[in-house]
Image 1 (tube, helix red, strand yellow):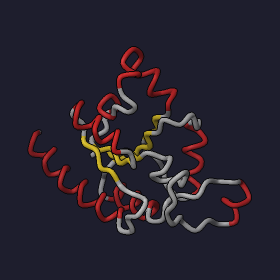
Image 2: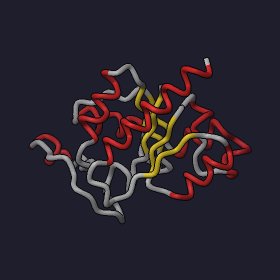
Image 3: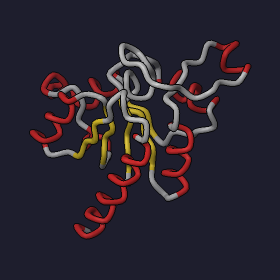
Length: 156
C-alpha cells in the first residue's frame, strides 16, 4: 500500500501545535524543521511492513529539501509531491482539487484538513484526517492502513 502524508499542520507544526520529535544537534544547527512526535517510528513501521511512504504537500518546499529533512530523521521517502509536481502532473485539472493522490498511485492520504477529506469523498480516494489534539494518532493511522490494505487486496 502507498501512504502519503501532508506536511504543514499534519507533520510539521504551523498554525496547529502538537508535540514534536526530539532533534539532534545536527538538525538544530542546520535549522531542520521539527516533525510531529511519533512520525519516525510510524514511518519506519510502515516501511518495515512493506508499504511505501510519500509526502504530498501543497507547499513549495523543494523535493530535495523534504528528502533531506526526513533523511536527517532516518527516513527514506519513496516519493514526494509538492505543489509544483501536483500542478505539472495534473495540468488543467490542478485547480479542481487541492490534492489528488490517485494521480500518483497513492492508496491513502493522511492530512489535517477536513476539506481534503471532503475532496476524497467527492473524487473517490481514501483519506484519514488527524487532529492536533490526537495523542495516539499513529495507532489510528496503522489501524486505517491495515483495514484498507485488506480491502485493497480483496479487490485484486
